[in-house]
Length: 474
Image (cartoon, rainbow, N blue to C red; front, side, top):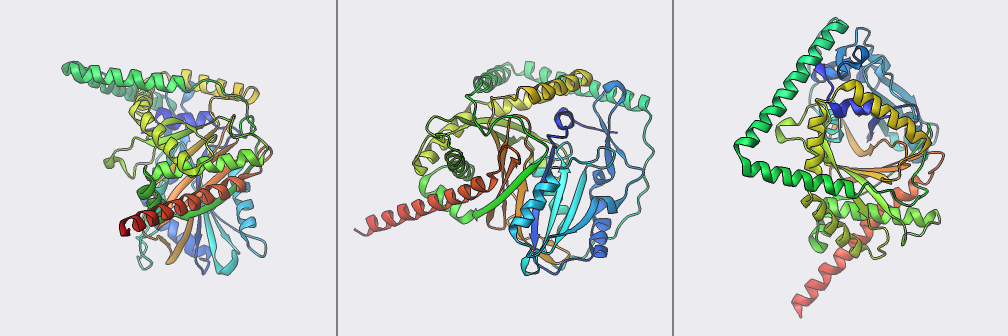
């Protein structure tokens, strides 16, 4: 039996009608639009490579264990792969309106937790594929890997032969509980084995304890309540969405000329975007404090392709008070270096590992209670979420049609009215902005300002390179 991890199960506990917990991708393809039969053939051929697409999350009696993945005896592919059409003229406004509407709807817990929508009617004969998959099933990197299974790396790759499938009978409640307790015992043994190994190497153990204490202290120091901002507060049931893009070559040039990593450059552009958003809403960026949750993958190289969540997080205060773009980049770079050295991400990963042996009925009850309280008193320790996921460098194809653009979607929850996801694909960076429709309709302001921030930094990098060339010639 496949049990959900603590983090996987938490995404189920956190979800309610105002906080759908799915991630998604908006993929735009060249024409012609595939027929219904072609799309069905594609998924029939690929489903055997994604067994969890036929499984649903089944809770255990009395929450005596974490939920397990079981085969859906009534699996219906046509329910999960759907079609729609945009009204003429099929412009981007219609597409992002559709994206917002689809993202506002929770996935059906009685079925496998994914949907794919084919949207036809885009201008120039293009079409879109919008994929939704519950966060309990995948994190951002696993979501990218899923696209790599459904899509192909060349236009002429033949579809694999579909394999016959028969649902396995659902285990009894007693069998699931017994398996959960066996799994809990194994998790406890694994944790104890790691503790025994630490005792055998006391110096390494001491350093590990020191690093964990540093990480927990760094995390706790950033959990203080911030002054209220309009981008924080309760969220409703409806989402708005916007996207933009930038050249990955420009980001690389910025990194080379001005310093930092690709992620530093992206965070600096996102910071500039929030500065513009605050100004647009009449708030003073000079006195604002925007703290972002920045997910960090702890997935090993041998764990690619696994459908689950392997993430920790850093808490980064975006320097929106800094007006100069290059100084913002330096501030982001300096802060990210400190955060990485603080061992915050490693401490978070250890806490999750220890949480795997906590009683599920206690963890679930606490999480749901916190979620209910947050409806009345939204948290004010985090302002937003910013996730950056590396995607494929080479183009992907669906039934021979090239994917032209790829934009990600990140969920938001109570207290966080706007979030940003970044995904690299075939030489471009796609920015996807999620916002609460009722309280934060300026998603496009943020998306456009992020792309403009990259352009501004790229011009500064070109100017710097030109200065260096002229200095060398003099």
